[in-house]
Image (cartoon, rainbow, N blue to C red; front, side, top):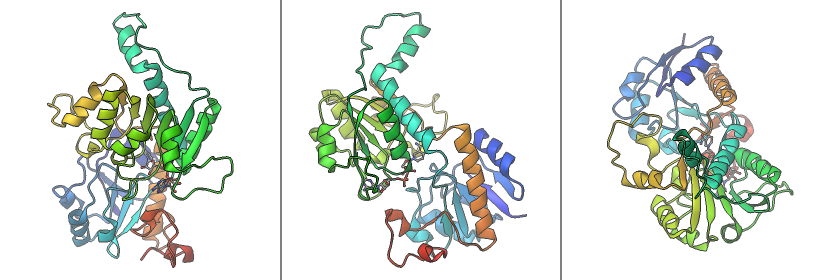
Length: 345
Ligand code: NAD
């Protein structure tokens, strides 16, 4: 029976992996994968990791030394993996889609809450404060939403927005041929949108795609939604834009420096991240802890696909969901081995 070291295991992971697993000896480790904890993978045949784990060169080299030849990411995003280091050493597989609906619906949930101040209303009524002063929002109907990244999640979000009667503009470095999507230049999206929602991956081109320069171009009173990756936004620039009133509200499921904080109960600790403290102190910011994926359907799909990815690896098959540093660019690479139905190396 192949042994799997499963890092940063949470009760909801165990529930669904135990339900779907028939053939692996899974060792659930509560700790995150870091250079300090990597040794815990000793004796395992594979590592299952998550966005919160550190898969830098040091960790990858150590895993290789321990005989690990496959990393199964139980998530879609993979900006925390040093693919160049992994290339030729261990195959990296992921779960490209588990429920675009879960994330897109959460993005709309954040927008609705921030706009209509539901998070504040909830606190007020719990205290029998039934004043509605200061809770005014805007109609979303008729407003323009700018969607950056029109992949699986972005497209579901577009459909949801259309259902709300919003005008949708989109920007994508690799636009689809879908003629129902109105693609515009990024600057035009910035200048015309009342809401901007991020659905692109984090890479060299997209890091701080929302920076001071971008905020300067936006309409006064724009709403920002980010369910993709924290570093798509320059947090200091966002704070300034919130302070100046340029940004009317922000619904964030991700944060630039979330890795050491999210998924853990830090309520008893002094928050040392001043930017995060400032962000959550703003009444017009709603921050959730990278939970947009968290639906039963998504968790079941994550478990199923991760186990299928491992089955393919151990049976020597082509790896349907493999990614490497060339795939990472999100474009079709010439001579890509995947096109020939081969593993990335
Ligand atoms: P996807 O690969 O289907 O779509 C990403 C889109 O972004 C593609 O259309 C791609 O062409 C586009 N893109 C690539 N580079 C770009 C650039 N420089 N500028 C603009 N667009 C660019 O991915 P998806 O499944 O829709 O996921 C989107 C993102 O959502 C992921 O990258 C991940 O970071 C995030 N995500 C978050 C959660 C969560 O729980 N918060 C869960 C799943 C995914």
